Image (cartoon, rainbow, N blue to C red):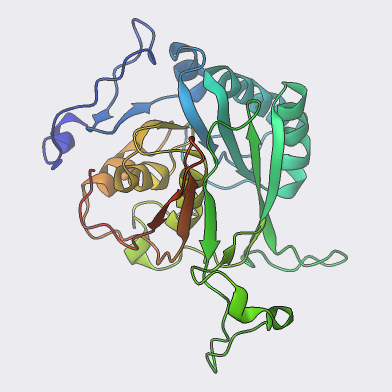
Length: 313
């Protein structure tokens, strides 16, 4: 691990205050924006202080029998899987600041149960976001499963919410607009339409320019993760991802100027490779962020860049 870190093109290490308890594990990777820990999230999370991170983004194994490596068990009995999820969810709630956001990406069958756990622990429901992805096969005797679930809860009233506008949908064949918007098209905001809780513009991550060849398991789109980050945080805020996977969250945070805390049990080498690489790209992203200032005077509007050329902000 240490030999790989010497090749990182980063500046001074981030020195967070008020986040880690004394004696916390040593990270395997540090950057000016974040820390990556190699280990079990249930062992690392207790070393983080209460009320210390701004957003949690969790994409755990779905318990569908995938092979991630010897350290990860993705074939637990249902009751065991749910009990395990509740343990790390409770830890994530503990470290989340009041008003902070909790995003949980999973299959609908699990998020029904896990959403109830979030509510029982006092979090406020914001949205069930349907991510339209036909990456599964049709199942005889059932409807064709065509979406994943992204739960969005907050720890009380949200301290940050940044509205996002997306481009008006057009036909990919003729280029014409798909809807007429009730004849009020000319009165619409030129920056696009308000983002809904159905995201049908997230593509599966199939091309190698968007992911590492050393990790065969599914990887999240940078566009999906970036939306959660932009909706719920400001530059300089801290995002926690207890299941680092391919490192998508950390790559997005580096580009967006957010601090990050990452935990990964199996593939820290893949994450380090991604953070070093200039060849793994971000997905095209035409989102337009509207930020209402706390004072209520005016708006600060930011157009999202597609592919950052600098790894650290």
